[in-house]
Length: 292
Ligand SMILES: Nc1ncnc2c1ncn2[C@@H]1O[C@H](COP(=O)(O)OP(=O)(O)OP(=O)(O)O)[C@@H](O)[C@H]1O
Image (cartoon, rainbow, N blue to C red):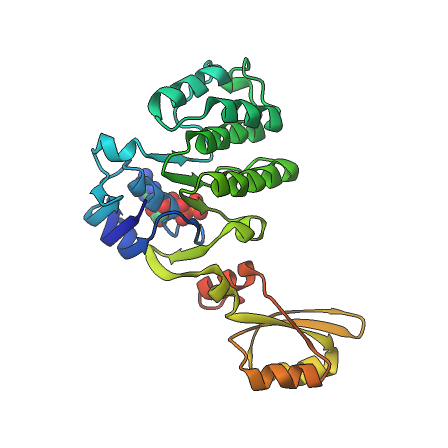
């Protein structure tokens, strides 16, 4: 299901959270939504879920405006860091029952399997869950809803590393079986970056880029080899970071290398490798005076 934003502006009183955002996200893909603190990610996802009305511009999902449109929002599931809907006395199994009643696409067996994998007991009350287990319940609801548009807003914060890896693997496996539009807003970029087909970066409410993840990765390169050779090779390039271990140095640079430069690197015994998406993100969103 396609997501389309046209000239979207969102204000909270005097604060402009989103400022003229125009974006077209074709359906059936996994998107990474990246942005620094306060850049507008949660605001954007709230608009997509129909929780808020844009101050200006249009938000359409599957071709339809979403605000106050129950038919459209039935196919959209937003999972935030904490479960919005659950009072602390409600039991886990009751949360799943509510989700089942809300979503025609709900898969109860899959929800049960996920709870087992995340080791969350159905009889536990929500208030008794640890932060990580609460997040696990949230992502269980998000995945088992199988809504055509599923939005995860930092929903796995608080989960330990094995649980986060489980979440990542489940997103991929379930997406392959049941393709849909998934948007993941995250600060743990490298952990989930392998999932992203396309990346959207926003900063101060404005679009910085919307690009294929592979094209974005190709915007930078890691150069590794003998320190002196590496220094000579990267002279004049935009260096994002460097690490040295004994005589070997690894430098990440911003900018694509043409074939001649790549050949020259090989002739000097230098290795060229992919750069972390997180390094590019830091560079592209660095404020004046910050390391980029
Ligand atoms: N309910 C609100 N009332 C007033 N201002 C708000 C409200 N919600 C968000 N804002 C402001 O809107 C801007 C965007 O916030 P938003 O929560 O969308 O950013 P974010 O990218 O999700 O941030 P983070 O990564 O820190 O969660 C910020 O300046 C924030 O202070």
